[in-house]
Image (cartoon, rainbow, N blue to C red):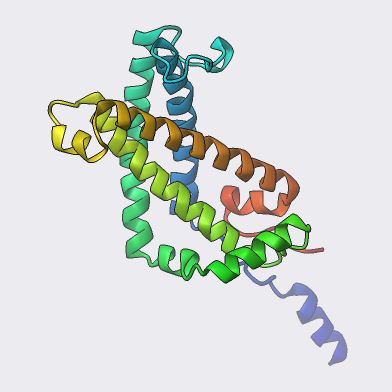
Amino acid sequence: MSSLAASDQHTAAPATAKVIQPAWVRIVHWINAVAMILMIMSGWQIYNASPLFTSLRFSHSITLGGWLGGGLLWHFAAMWVLVINGLVYLTLGFISGRFRRKLLPITPSAVLADVKAALTFKLAHDDLSHYNAVQKVLYAGVILCGIIIVLSGIAIWKPVQFQELTAVFGGYDAARYAHFFCMAAIVLFLAVHLALTALVRKMLPPIIIGPAPRRR
């Protein structure tokens, strides 16, 4: 009997791994990543044609489009992908309750405690299904920046047709500054995001295959 029990334990199917990132999150994440990179690089090409800061130019090697017209074509093409994909993400995030579960609550005390832990390299990443306070602030912040950058972009693109929206930003020039600083915040977020992924490598598999890697 004992040998049969042991045999059953060996032949039993392994427990199903917990899915950290559902399929729809993984799909919109990678579409958004590609669209955002195209938007940023083509946006730098457009910026160079009429810079906000005379001392700041982006190297031609990291811009997309080759010239102003080419940059605009790439920017508008990627814009539609980003907007449609973003609307899908926001809709599913609210309907599924993911935003409520993942991003709330956010308290100042929790943020300060996790920032202190991060600066002393004591911030835990044991449970990948749970966001710490720093992650909550970063993800909520980048979503807000994404919304503002789209709205300011529309205000810049069609300042006459959407003059009420342009007025909300304080005019065409102010909308350009809002657009630029939101771009800078998103680029900073991407840099931090990539750095954390490189440091905590177990964060990468869930956004590719869904489940977290099994411990051995």
